Length: 371
Image (cartoon, rainbow, N blue to C red; front, side, top):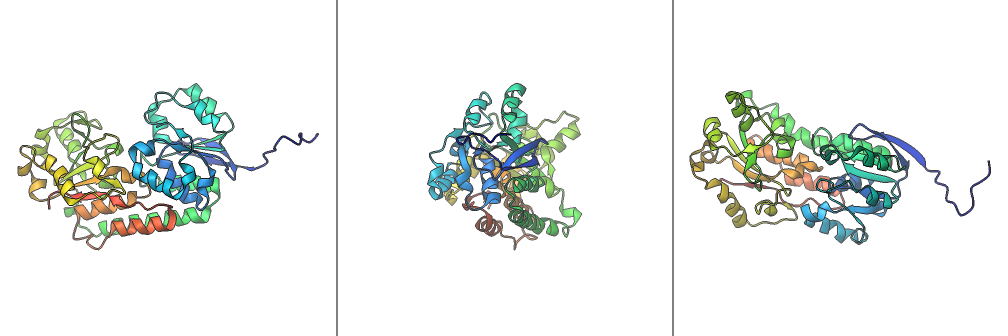
């Protein structure tokens, strides 16, 4: 067989086969040279597992980071100016159509996409096939549907792609150690103190809604053995429960929740949510003013959780990253303050970031409302 013309570059890189978070077998060339980051959720994971030099492989940056977490994007751009001028991938959750042509134009070796958006948006099968059969490795990651148990799966997929197995093992070990700090203590807490009734609300939805799906920010509470007041109310009424439903004061009176939780999310654009997140140093006065909007509702002052001063606001989306262990630790301290009095979520988060991430996840993530 004759040799290829001298002006034709032969790509003889090794092909690595991985199974992504949608269960698809994908071939990816090693080492990757051109990578598309399809959403902000993939940034930390890829940077952490790849390690030094990760930014040199990026050819497309996720646009949703500029709208949902601009301060974090600014930190990345500040450290890696070359990222700022890259083409932007559309917000995969809100894009009107799957941007197959734009993605293919990047001539990438690897395209990382959010599995949750790919599944929930139900992209046209033929369009998706056009991309996945183009010769580019299209890999989905999922930090959304099970933010605690799937962390290692995401890391391991990227470990196979980058062959940074030792670094990936260290990431998983530190993450697991921080989960263990909570679960080991939970084993010592009597069952009589567990099973707390939790009311969870997401500010910014109109009308106000609350629920128990992962999208509503409850996996932390599930791991701590808590009960969702909304679910319990529906069971007792023999009503069909859905992931979200309109605010119901009757439910609060009937269930008498032990704890009120207001889960902040950048998806819904509430004024209060903007006080929370990366690089936010919100004042105590602003946080208390935001809390009063909810605590001063008619009748709220007579409810058990408010009287017991068991109310807090937190940024639920922290759990879509490696920082999910910190969210679990914050919630554990709020539910069981005596048992977790020596636990320092912020310090643990800083240690993780200093070891594996190029930027620190510092900011305002939690606020006790009823102090």
